[in-house]
Length: 310
Length: 310
Image 1 (cartoon, rainbow over the protein chains, first blue to last red):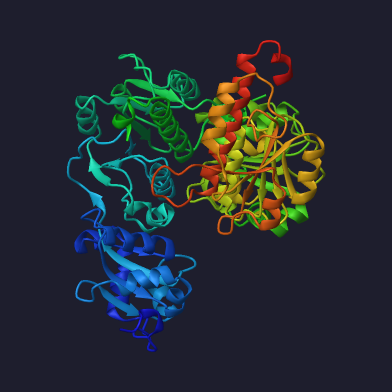
Image 2: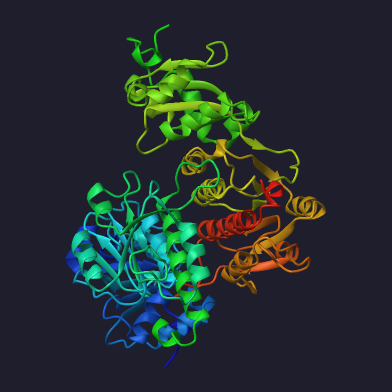
């Protein structure tokens, strides 16, 4: 069988075809809800979508349709191989002209690859697993949400959870700024903040509110965690070495009083200069990496505990 | 004298007036270069511009013109007071209708306040001072540059330096995403990367390249710095407690080979999950905060060294 990258014919040339329009319409939430699908663009993100299906990791985010410019697959042999391994009975694969790809996309610079996938956002209740997760409460800016999902992935968080009232994770700008991380860790959407907190608390997790006005200093927590290493955390004290769910609030308003009330501690990223605050995505990155470091150091300083900490 | 916030007349009502157009034109680089001015919008950023002038901190970024909706000053009495203290001989202050403010701005939601200031980007050589600074090499995305300037401010960096070929810091999107931090620390622009590195190296600074493929792990450096506290750093080893200039590279291409060659060490933010990389603004935040923490811990664990570390 000839590789898709080497086939001579371009199959889709009409940017006004119905199929092209239906892919373009996935920029809108109602089209996504109606079809149960969303659009993923560009080599990095499409590669992660394809890999995630290959590994059968999640029963969400399955690639259903794949559109490519032949030269893009030629430039990315690893993606070409993933595409060649797709079962044509499952996935609709077509080569396209640059005009067709551009008409499907709302990116400023379409990058020659578009996938249509089943939605990744889960709406069922989530079971607390792992050691630290992010809970986004009413976040509205797609770039922030995408950046936090990517940072949560990088920091090794087990899940990202979004409250109802947060932006849809399938929004094209969110998808773009996650650069594939949407396919790496489970994403929960439309969640009730207090129900989630209740579930994690029942499972013995600590609840941290990231709050610029908080009375607990992130860097101090971090130093204590590194100094204490594998020693048992005191049961009532805020401690980064415990399993932690981090609450992050709306860009303009922060966390509401009701959300702050849910937390065991209000943790502030220290400001060493004159800035009055940090962007929420920046703050979230620092908080999640602080959790990552504390859990690592706990694992590294302890050999007897090692099996608990993977 | 009546407070500006309480004056009954709105002085500027014509959104097509020449003066309005000339403020709007500051969205473009050529108009900024020609006039030597740039536009600042919204309460937070305008407040910082006014304060910075009040403190006479920098001989740049002086407010020259100020346009306000009366209700905005009424909602922000602290800003109203700063405006009342301006010398009318120095600053052109006018109340405006919402339409006039909107016509001056390219923000999606203009926030009732616009200032026109002298440029803040310095083009002269910079003297190495302080303990850690950021050097942006060819960064193009205004949101990234703004976020890094804000994070550098928050982390207590002494300066942010931009290479020639980076986006102009007076670009409206950069200005917006710094949320006033442009007025907090000196910003150098159009700098030659190797000349800057040479100047810092001569002053005894360590040169770190932030590089996803780097062989030095940021978190390991951080742990070592915290463990070593005030003990003298080994002279040849990478050590966050030394004065450090951080090089950050272009969004798509990273640092060039030539830029990497300039560094004493290539430092990677560890990736604990499956993400292949971090956004440059996210990585820069983690790097600069790591420097901040290491210098703090050095200062805190040492009383005899305390005077060296302010």
